[in-house]
Structure formats: structure tokens, C-alpha cells
Image (tube, rainbow, N blue to C red):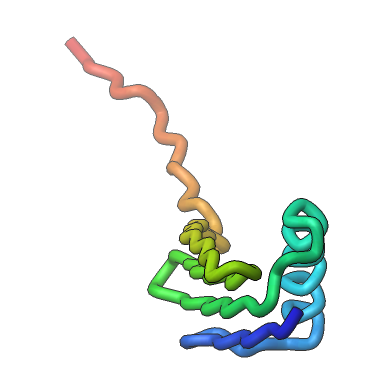
Length: 89
């Protein structure tokens, strides 16, 4: 299967390419090796990662899918522990 991998605001590292190829191999096995080519676009928008997959199979069949994931790698803000308000009186 021919793979066209595009990254928008994402650097395509060899490890990322290998992960995409592994996931598409599972899909290719399910389709009984009828997949001809796949186009994968990885996009990063602020805190979202979006994957758009278009797969071309024999017999003019086209499968497409869109997936999104959020990544929050920023540490949570710690709430300050204040002593309870004491009222005098």
C-alpha cells in the first residue's frame, strides 16, 4: 500500500511515521489486502491534534475518517490552601 503522510504544524518523525504505518497495517489486514493507497494528514491546532485519513481500495472504494485528540501537557494550577475565614465577635 502506498502511503502519503503530511504534517501541518507537526514534524513527521520516523517514530510517528512508523506508528501510522502500524495502525494502517491493521486496517489493511481487515480489508483483506485490497487497500491501494492512503493519505494521512496530521494537524496540530492549539491544544488539539487532528488526524484525517483517506484510504483508497480496489473497485473505486474510498474510506475516510477524522479523529481528534486533546493534549494538555500543562501542569495544573495548584489551589492555595487558605485557612478558613475566622470571624471575631
